[in-house]
Length: 252
Ligand code: PEP
Image (cartoon, rainbow, N blue to C red; front, side):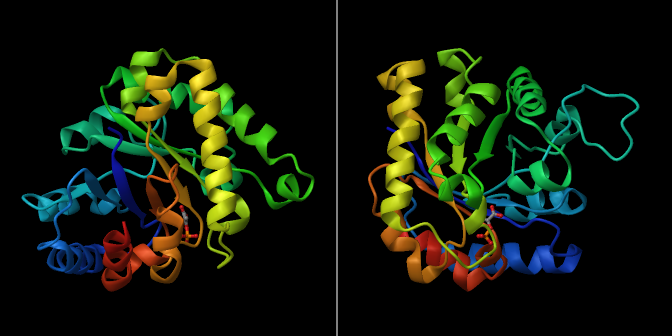
């Protein structure tokens, strides 16, 4: 059975003290919830990852990284390797976020290399993808999403998919306050599941968790999460406030 996941992407927010406060507040908010088959994830900045791992220990919160370099080690100033992440207890990495694609030029081809590095290191990835507003307006969104998945993920073997979580994030809905309607999310998630089934098989498609990301808030989470192919959310802005993030967790 596929898992439900609520993941908070903190992006470049929260210093050391703010990280501590937010983890502790989320811990308190969710300590009495029964989170059967549901994962709660936060992705703080690299500099606060280790302290976040320590703070989350013994709770239901998993701490993941926001990015990772594809090389094992070497002359890559400013970058972080899989070994470094593993050495502080990280087991999962967000890849392909639209901000990485837009501001740091990450392409599908580079992301395929990063995905390979994740798998070689027995890590998991929360793999983000999604169309631009112009793609949706020109009715090209299904093609764009299909080619993103094809280029970055469809070289994998079926067995690798137990380490893949998909996060469909229409770029026009990230940080804009504009959310895909629950129907638009369901339509795209069902399409994604159908192309995974076509490429692999029904078991892989049924077991992969597909998260929706893009201006999910306490007010809209329940309706979006009620859709059968939406297995949770990748949350940006609303993950920075413990009460909002925990309200979204409760919605699932
Ligand atoms: C994100 O950055 O992944 C995201 C979904 O952001 P927001 O929730 O703020 O739109």
